[in-house]
Image (cartoon, rainbow over all chains, first blue to last red; front, side, top):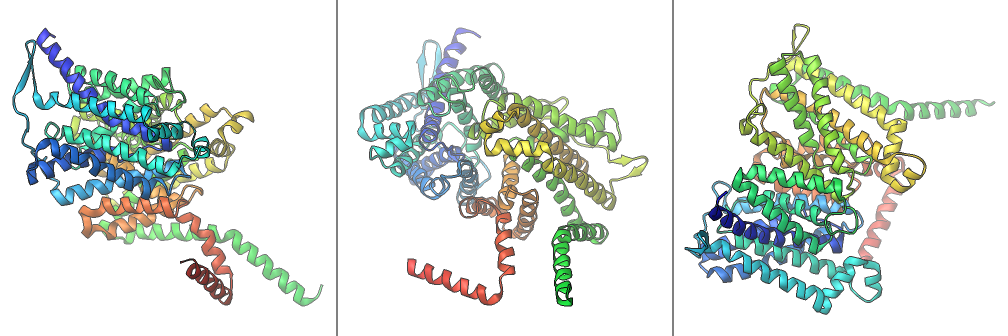
Amino acid sequence: MDTVTLIQTLLNSVVASSIYALVAVGLALAFGVMKMANFAHGEFFMVGAYCVYVLYALVGLPFPLAVILAIPIVALFGLVAERLIFRPTRKNILAGFMATAGLAFILQVLAGQIWGVGIAKSIPTPYMGAADVGDATIGWQRLIVIPCAFAMLLALRFFLYRVKLGKALRACAQDPEIAALQGIRTNRMTALAMALAGASAGLAGALMAPIHSVTPYMGHGVILIAFVVVIVGGMASIEGAILAAVILGFIHTFVTTVTDNLIATMVGVGFMALTLIVRPQGLLGRERA
Amino acid sequence: MSAPDEAANSSLASATALRRFAPLLLLAAVLAVLCVLGFELKPYHRELAIVFFINVIMVTSYRLITTTGDWSFAHVVLMGAGSYGAALIAKHAGLPFGVVVPMAGITAAIVGAAFIIPLLRTAGFGFFIASFAMGELVRLIWVKVQFPFGGTRGIINIPSPEIVGLRLSPPVPFYFTCFIVMLAAVFIMWRLDKSRIGNAWKSIHSDDLLAECVGIDVARYRSLAFITGAFFAGIAGALLAYRMGSIDPRNFDLTTMIYLIIWVVVGGTATFWGPIVGLVVVTIAFEWSRPLLEWRPLMFGAVLIFFLIFLPGGLESLFPKVGSALRTPPGQQFQRLRTWFTTFASRT
């Protein structure tokens, strides 16, 4: 691999890591608070991408506005999923998860029926041109993913560690009963966690819409990688999810460059299996997956 | 003893006998009907019945794994391992049907044994998610590797099944082949469920720490359940490969897995027969919904959510209620309904 390809691949790895981190952080956060994982998380990503398709490509709003609008829309999906699926099934931890598999079906069919199943939706690239880094070039459209993801993750960190509501959310993740004794409303915290999870997945989908091919089934590949990242990082650990996102982003991009996408996914899953055998609690997790 | 006493005694005895043998009679009746149907059904419905038998093996073996509390998301891929195993063995080694089917089961069991090594480190959600990822890994290998799996196009021209010169491929013989294999598989799994091993599996589900304390090797029994389930999934996969004559990775994708979960959830997993009941009901509903082809995943996704929220025990949890309703006299039932209605009305 020569230097140009190396720099190019490094940059692409950072882009991939940012997206993985955005998607996986939501899953880890929701898992921490509810002890439940959302199988429709990949479909939330898909809805985010469709928001950009509708608002930017069809309605004609400016791209940044479409991305920003996608965040609350998908957060609303998260809220509704929490209220209608996770809250009624809280007593049975597997039921909520399996019910979201049904939700994934529903969202796929709705997207397919409203906007068509056939070919991937083409979204005109809002930021044409490419930046020169050394001798390598990388499209602006890919580069802007990095600052957006950083901004979202930093905002999330600020919220979780500096804002009272965020601290309550973390308390709820540590021990819901003790948190309830302190006067924290557990139901509100689970709703908040799902809204944040939806928001981050929606942002990731919205940012990827011009790069990724937008189809009703695009969530499938995303959820696979997100699950792998969350398991490698340690189920409920946000820091672990980010660390694992970086590691897997680099592994995935480098293997893709050398061979192809399928083999890269296989290597990622293999890495997960190895992590489970060597360190079942994940890289930064405290309890076993 | 006076005459009325004797009459009461004998009627009591016949009632207990009836209760005891009623399930057996019902089973015999169902089997007899299925035998007759094998000859009488129209070709399309016979094909449906063949798929139904294969799916019975799938749901029963899936339920066997869930008795330990592990909900796997790789079961359909393990079935695929059996299909690919059967197709490759039948095609390249030219072995007969009677040898290929058990070997397909063993292939799936070996793949299952490889899966369970990392999966044992997980429980609950981790198990669900990690088994999904492991299954995808195997499915991607089928998609990617041209030799011997044939990539996205899969394997075609699987030889038609034969036993000692008897051709099994025409619809009627194949119906009975699947029927007999299904009966054998279900019988073995039913015996396993009632055996000491089955009890050990259930004890892990109710309390794994307690099970470990009384000397049950939890890791070994969980592996055993997973590998046994994989073996029977492989058998089902072999039948599927023979029926279709060609297989490709799309036969074993996530959608099929979610349908498997819908069958099991609709039926319920507490009893042995629950998943089969769920399969029967959902299969019928699935056929009825044929005109609404594109909306089908949405409908069944909604059914899954409905059952998980409002009837988490599945249809089987209704049986005792229906039974008690049948035993109470109609007058009392009316009374009960009225009380229920007034409380409901006062609440709203």
